[in-house]
Amino acid sequence: MSGATINISEVIGTPNAISQKFGEIVYSRAVTFIKNKESVVFDFGGIKNLTSGFCNASIGRLFLEFPLAGNLIHFCHLDNSLWKEKVDNSIHLATNPEESKLYDSALASLFAD
Amino acid sequence: MISYSLSGDIRTNAKGTQALLDFYSFAKKFNDCWFNLNIENLDWLDGNLSALLLKYCHLLKSENKLKFYIDYKTLKGHLNVLDRNGLAYHIVNDKRYFEPYDDKDTTIPVKAFKLESIDSFVTYIENALLKHQGLNGIIFDDKDRIKTSYFEIFENVGIHGRTEYPILACGQYFPTESELKFTIVDSGCGFLKNIEEYTKETAKIKRASEAISWASKGNSTKGEEKGGTGLKGILSYCMKNGGALHIVSDDCYWAFSNRSINTFTLKNNVSGATIHLIFRYLSKN
Image 1: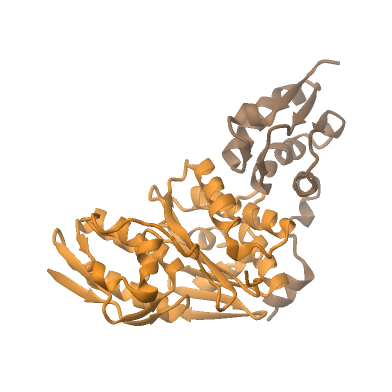
Image 2 (image 1 turned 180 degrees about the vertical axis):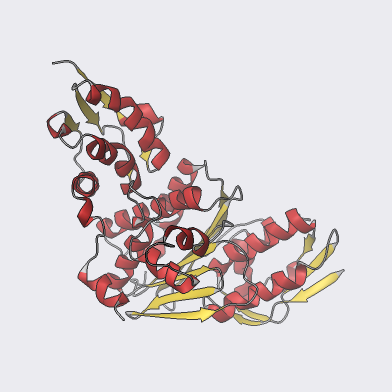
């Protein structure tokens, strides 16, 4: 099967995947393959920091635009549990837009009138 | 030489912020001259507020061409923190007597970051803040979440702040109180402008206090591309660990502490936002 492995830290030129701009770069690298129904492996090897903003702009955006692409998108070296949570959240937000207002009950009670 | 006296106690609260704003409002009236920042009558200044004071002095230097003077002999006792954390060095024109060196290891030095200096900001948060002796008692997972929240906040300034001015940061550890206060400041457009525009058909937010609350819940003006987790992450940490989060924007000083939110009105605030995070109940080393 054709496709690509995208080493994130190499593509963005830093181990700190913390900006939306970097997410857009990774998205641009992957989108052509997804459009052509080719698989993409996102390699987190070499990454030291990761934010939700980056995940939403890259992986989340792919799932938003290609809701059925789940079987084409894979991850490797995603060993950090907090990062896995961020990646999973970005996918969940993209595929469940009606739940986009994440709101724990503790925060809800703080802001209640 | 024009002179202005900072006096009394200036702490991380609305009154302290107003005191620094009053200084800026006064100094803004002058152009292209020497300016003596007199601290003889200053009893206390929270060291983390150096980020805010440096912002005002930076604006006055660049926009009003003021040249600052501080009498080195007055930086004694507690006030030597303004020397140790680098504030005095960055403010004064004659830097011969000011050499930032923290022999007490209680400061997180005041530092400026351009919006494109992401790696530099990462290093500062990871090393200067999270490896500070004052935060030794915080578990790794919490530190990981805190640093990620700050990265999101830094990113949000770049997207929403609409400014080319640097972001400033500074921290201070208060071992007697078991507190560490960390302050980050930008010179952007603040919270209200963007959020008022974004919510004009929905929540119709018109006041700064509402805008700050809206952002702290995790909302974002980024539209389909979700974001807004930075402040929510910091607030969640404070709720879990008894810390405090203060946010200053437009005419509002918004303060979360002890599970409640209080707001105060400021006069003559300067464009931009300030975020203070107060870590509490730290272990004493």
